[in-house]
Length: 573
Image (cartoon, rainbow, N blue to C red; front, side, top):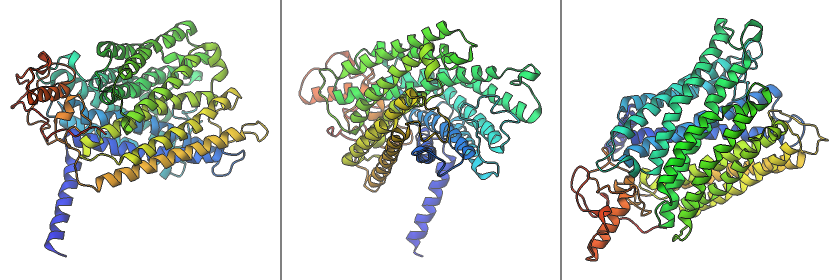
């Protein structure tokens, strides 16, 4: 073995230890993202098994008990081990960069939150390793199904403990994000000059601080009932199983917006860049974000219409009302594109795809907010289609937009554009083929959570089509992984601002240095990098600066240069 090989091995060992012990917000963001995508792959494989089982009537691959475990862990992993941590991934990497900070306020707490999330997720998945199998109670964990003697698997206890760990991790992260945004903004960056993504994380973090204690308390109560004889949910001993539903959905419906709001912010960042216009109605967008967060705490009981234990008119009204600020955002995005100089690289394709798919999910959500319709569709595949239309069509479409948009900032490399676009079209076609038939299945009465269905029910063709779509989704993820490997094998060449973007993270090198910025541009609007680029262009042409937004006085540490610290921006794709 040569000395060079030994030295390379030593450096690799040191770098691994560096990743394990890191408190750098950028590395923690990457760790969150890679781990969340790992859980996404696991949850996706479970979904493929379920769709293969449902392709035709009869039990071919798994039995009822195993199927219950598969959909429990699939739902849990997608919602709480993938979607919410992916928000943390984007927020960890971007928030300090977007506000001009060197790191998070509490870097060690930030590292602790990641490791709690990782170990919590592994504890949940470890249910597959015990003889009794994983949790089999559905991702909502309704009592009494989740209490003894109805669920006796050790996997259910592991599910409770794992979710407690991941919940505490999320609360720690929210404290860090709020404190960083409030206290670490660069000089000149008032609240109404923050990027809309940072605004989205601020509102989301406040939501987490209100919503996650409810599910934490519910999980502790469930663990006490399962293992220590408490009777919170036992009606024969003075308890009430509906209490679990109230506590769960008081967390669960804000959780939908905890996932969605940050990805609304992602779309608010990408569409203006590829429209070559500022975001239409910036202040209205911010206000709509705040109202969505506030209203999301008032709609939890629309999941409980059929229990007979909630006020139907009130929760129907609030459920309709929350569509208004969401609709405002659609006007923001649409009017930003109108009259713009549109280009359609992969991030913009994903952003436009998000608009169509999330709009359809929102319309079906308004339908389910009506109690008479909800009574008919409750526990059918219509609800499954709506849920995935909102969460996959909304959050995951915009997640892919964010990944393709910020991948050059994280790695210094652009994804291969033909591969990225191939992934978009495979995913979009697969999404429509998978979930559109499920609306009809629900209208035809097919119940969800069942491993089998009658051969004479007339549901076989639609189920087969849905299964084919699911495998198209899997193929699109494989294309994405190939694109990532291909990009990482190339030298870093993206430059600091490959998209000619707007917000402050594009001022830093790609990838950013340890303390993010050697200097900062003047911050006179919500688009400081655009302003600096325009000032440099005007100076090169001998023109006067265009107003106070590009005044030459420095607003951050160090000198102000005419271009991002890592070099000149490249032309957009």
